[in-house]
Length: 330
Image (cartoon, rainbow, N blue to C red; front, side, top):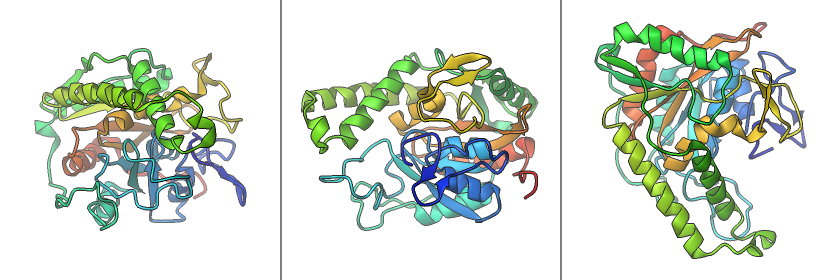
């Protein structure tokens, strides 16, 4: 099942989370994350149009990288849609693994031009440098304005920031770009709908014009520039990958629960989709567990085209966050 925050398919049915089979591994790359956590594969490939690498990595306690858009070829992505290739921005293919080293090695293999996707620039993939925490400038956000997150997830971000403060050049709660995060998510959804539905007969009846599409790209450009200015000051943003940990299997679009409050299902990806919208790279790394024994991941985001330094920072952060932990029984 694609384009959802759970995973299932008509052949094998529902995909379970190795940490608790009553919980989802996330989606849409939930099978990859579950297989990694269970030790069935040493690494895997995911796709990320709306946090679909990062949510499963967070739910299953593994590492995942969403590269800058157009860093990894999209050849073969979502085959079978009518018309010419519709997905040209926002979506990414990226690696998933149990260590940052494996993440970096797999990224180096898949990044760069393949001779088929003409939008991937023919530039070398930089080697991941060695670095320490001491010179890093880290901004953190326990959540984003208007976007809910459980108290345990917000606290995890704050706890990690507190642990890092004496080890880094600067660790401060972020003054985030002046964007409406809910509006950004809505605009991302609009763009996704425009692209995936462009050649669908039912969508062609809607009054979407080239002017609407160009206006959507204009708003996107403004957001990209706002975040690039933010990363002129900070090496990374430390923030949640999602508002919740792995939730119980449910019907898609069912309300989810954040500290006792019903919350829109589709806000599950709100902390991640903003960076699909802007194209910024992000890594999710496992950090701790919640009161139910489910993984809590941390998302780190860097400026566009900064995968090498972002992976180096992720590696350095594991000195504090720790290594991959196997689910009980695996």
